Length: 561
Image (cartoon, rainbow, N blue to C red; front, side, top):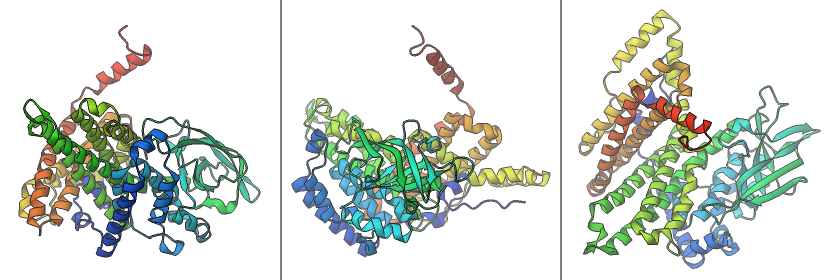
């Protein structure tokens, strides 16, 4: 008989009916030395930005001034996560997240420049590069003399990396690459680009291979830059490859490992995105509170009206949850543990919360929110792409469930193959009708929130088991149903991450009291949302919506004439 799984990831364990207290405590924090280094670096960046960075000008001119790039290089920002032996600062993921949050707070365009370089552009080199490749590229990448980019997306392949059409075939000791990539951040300024292409000769199934491509390679050409809604200071460029010869030593990892490499890079990139969203949301909340306290309407400042208070409170709640989700996931990553589902959840929640925050900021500002030179409309435009970056949120919801339920689903399949197994599976399900325990979360001030979380965790597990039994392999075709499970998991992880953070404040009663003031509304909101999604697993009108969509498809638009 198969053993019941004990997954390494927090969310995979929740799906399987377990609360991994050992992964939730202690809440991740920077050590004193790294925290001091980050504080000093952020302070120097803010001083530089006050002199040189004007987000309005960057947005208007659609370029980051060379003086700003040079100043960022002098601060060592392009080498944040590059090991010291190659000239970088050697900071960990948590420190990188704090710095990228601070940079985004000032100007999201600078975040994208740095994130495309560090978080995805050269990340594969850090994860899979050999010593020769690292020694060749990393020193110049660390100083900013060279910039990195990441090229996966194609006209017919975005989140669906398996549909990539670029092809590399063996050519003597190297490879010959043909194809194109679109919307590549830093593509027009990069000196090293991590490019993914099909390599059919490697094995059956047309696996992908990752290559380190330099613009100087013959046959490489830049296409036009995209006209974008936001983040206009960064070009999104077309890359074209026409019989580009790539030396064998420029294969990243092993031939045929490209899909795995891309997944690992994107998992890491989602952590940085979540942190950057927190930076934008904090900026929005500062602008919102300042405006609410000074704007008068109907005889008082708008800060006194409940509808405005609700918007401001929601911003604070979303920042707390985003930070907590990201930090707990970063803690898993820094320990070398499974964090892929937690990173996806953090990116989904953070990007949607940031859009909601930016949208409400525009609403609060009224007419000023819609026009320049006020910053509100620019912030909204810059925020929109985060729900698309690093995998669309629709795809990531499917990913959360597909990967999250794997340990449980595997056990259920194996157990169902024999009469004894089926009996043990039923017995196991009955034994899990009580909520999981939360041994590490014993702070009395948190008891009410812990009870809510225990209830949510128990329902997530039982409803997942029931849904897997009811739909089996056909569940993959029920995407709205899957999305409901994903949203339930998002809220369960959100509660777990916030409780982890609150528990860490137990010795500071003032800080805990303030954090609880923000956390309590989230738990109520999340519990209500969880119940709505839970109810939709059994009773829903999904089929009616499918029929309405089919009619619109048949009529090529509004179906009623």
